[in-house]
Amino acid sequence: MKSPPDILVVDDTLENLKILTDILKLENYKVRPALNGKLALSAVRQSAPDLILLDIRMPDIDGFKVCQILRDEPIYKSIPIIFISAADEVSDKVKAFSVGGNDYITKPFNEEEVKARVATHLKIKCYQDKMADMIAEALGEVNILNQEIIATQSELLYRLSEVCETKSLETGLHVKRVSEFSYLFARYSGYCDPDEAELIKQAAPMHDIGKIGIPDNILMKQGKLNSDEWGVMKTHPTIGYTILKGSTRTLIALAAMIAYEHHEKWDGSGYPMQKQGEAISVAGRVVACADVLDALFCKRCYKPAWEKEQVLEFFREQSGKHFDPKLVDVLFEHKQKFMEIKDRLQDQLYQS
Ligand code: C2E
Ligand code: SIN
Ligand code: SIN
Ligand code: SIN
Ligand code: FE
Ligand code: FE
Image 1 (cartoon, protein in one colour):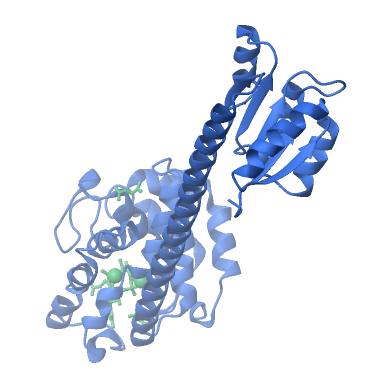
Image 2: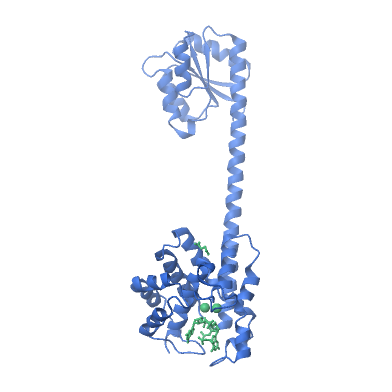
């Protein structure tokens, strides 16, 4: 809203134009007169007024048409338009509102009525503008907050997985492969829609975060673990869950679940809870497959890398034992896509 408010008065009769202009100038408004529809439109385009008084009956472009043209343009949608007409005709009033007008005054003008209606509509416009500003500001703040939360979340997860990788000597590529394998398992099984699969993909890098709590001499031991060491190693899902649980963020909550369940097995012989079948979350089952798939392809400090045929044979043999059979089917049906990821995100750890 400009100060003083800027009012466009449109009438093809000079006399009317003068009467209205005089009334409004007395109220200290800035008044711009226009003698026909065309001039009115160019005046609006030059500078949007705060309110328009618009005669209905004019040659060429009449008042209804001017109103319709302005209402079709988003930036002019909220300018209050008060129609003026000689005839106190009901059909004109109806049409005035149906083309987007806000009010209607009839000639001959009652000075007090003109002032009152103009003042009222300017007040409403002022509130609307304020409201629009506040909403825009609030939305902007929410947006910034959301972006900050998302950025904080990603950075936190990235940093945690980095710490974890450094300790376990796995590379960022391992985490990336597990993520991308997880997406394929989640999508092609039909268990997840694209958004859910994407969320699992983003949470998957955290599955081994609990290895932070495993002593290096166990984590990096060359060769087989003894039973005490194995007992310690088997605590990493619970440690990971403890680190991540309690968050109300969808992503972290899902990451906590994945950390907890990624070593559960379909037949109930996994750890730490011996969950079985569908009692294990989809995300847990998916990442279990993705993690083992990548671990077998990779050289580890305790094992060489496996050949593709060995890996596939292992999955076939473990279908319904370690793995959800439906997910094993996905691996065989979309073998090529899994191999593409393995080849694209290759690192030295693959070489045995
Ligand atoms: P990881 O290296 O990321 O392996 C993840 C999972 O892949 C393993 O979970 C297992 O299910 C599968 N996997 C990896 N290598 C082999 C293999 O040679 N044979 C078979 N059949 N499966 C394999 P798992 O067994 O629960 O182990 C969890 C983590 O414990 C492993 O994560 C690794 O960090 C550690 N780990 C397991 N066994 C040994 C070991 O003998 N020595 C050492 N130093 N660490 C081990
Ligand atoms: C173990 O039982 O020691 C871990 C199994 C493996 O090495 O894959
Ligand atoms: C999902 O479908 O988004 C995973 C939910 C689950 O873990 O069960
Ligand atoms: C591990 O995953 O803990 C073994 C480290 C490696 O050789 O990749
Ligand atoms: Fe693990
Ligand atoms: Fe892993």
